[in-house]
Image (cartoon, rainbow, N blue to C red; front, side, top):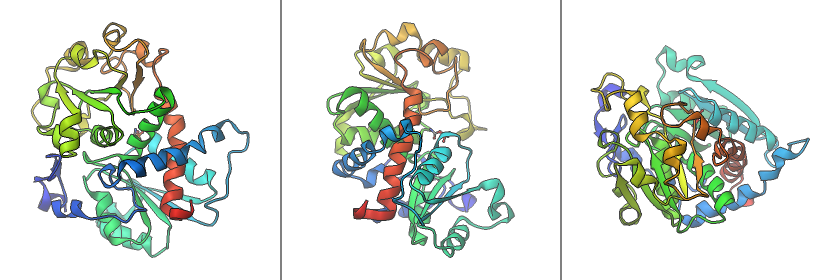
Length: 342
Ligand code: CP
């Protein structure tokens, strides 16, 4: 499939796809979480409010609720993951669902089975939800078009990582009270980042102003346009770190996703140079507001995009993002499986 379709361009984001662009026009049912683009601000806020019920569950000795008892969630991961896969599994188990994990190495795709055939076979076992991570942008939309189970996108290529954006919004909201009016800067490899795309859409819908900050070689052309007029108005491209950080309320750092451009021409001289010009250190963080929080979706490359002092410092909320991600994924799973009854 990849070879036939390589080179197709996403109609909005302009990044390379490996599935036909028409599939991205697929209108998912409400229960699927394929893309932040499918959710309006009210739906995003409803998920964040729903997740507020579960923040404190992590502090309880017994972290078990029963709302999804008897339900089945399949975690279908074709790319490596530490946070997202574990967090979805924990979220399902904390709601008493059966959680089944399938990795690419252990799936029959290694024997030539297509993603669609894999999905149809899984559907035949009647799961309630399938959580999917795949290196092809649009893989979650493909699945959603051919299974009855609710589909949740756990990251598809360079397209989107919607639950990361939801947990990031939840973390910002808990620290800052609200998101509207905040200045958020996203620094790093914007070109290859599904986290950046989902966050731009999510934060713009919630009323923040977003700066994307990177060297030109790591900025996709037209990134300000991915949400149409809304993001054209709210997103600003900045190519000097100090300008990006100036007066920011939230600093979101991204690693260079070199696995997504292996074999291409170099985008920057070397990681040392990139770190010197776009790395977040105690010196550069001083350009942001004194109460600015520092976020990172992980995995972090310490000493490249972020210094260890900042990553472990008092303004970093990076591990809170991980903790609170479980609450957000509990809300997402309940919404996906129970719908309005959640
Ligand atoms: N943030 C994130 O998606 O991390 P993982 O790749 O570990 O799931």
